[in-house]
Length: 119
Image (cartoon, rainbow, N blue to C red; front, side, top):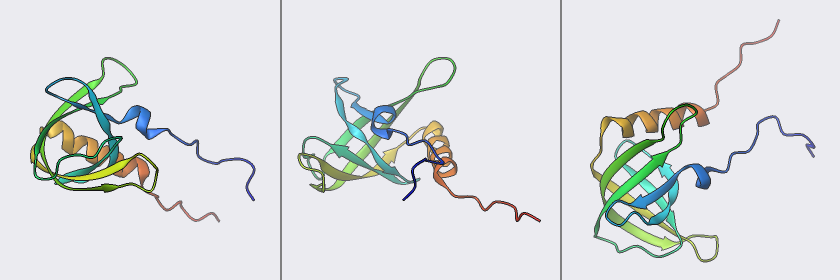
């Protein structure tokens, strides 16, 4: 068994929290993203068929955080394997260009790139 990590583990829920744009309260955190939608993990079940105004507050290494406001429709909601958590799938209705940049950045960050062969 490995005793030392090669890659430091990141606590994504801390960084990728999602808020209700209308009242500013936390609604959950990002489970995954794609160009056309996202999965949200929440402590409460979300209403299927409802439209949500979501606010992502993305931390920045330098300068102010990046704010991305999305309009999305909840397509499904089910209990997560973690007790007292729910997964909800959303289809995006409107998203700014910054959302596409976030999807691209996350895809690049979490992808595995082949290393050059050593001689």
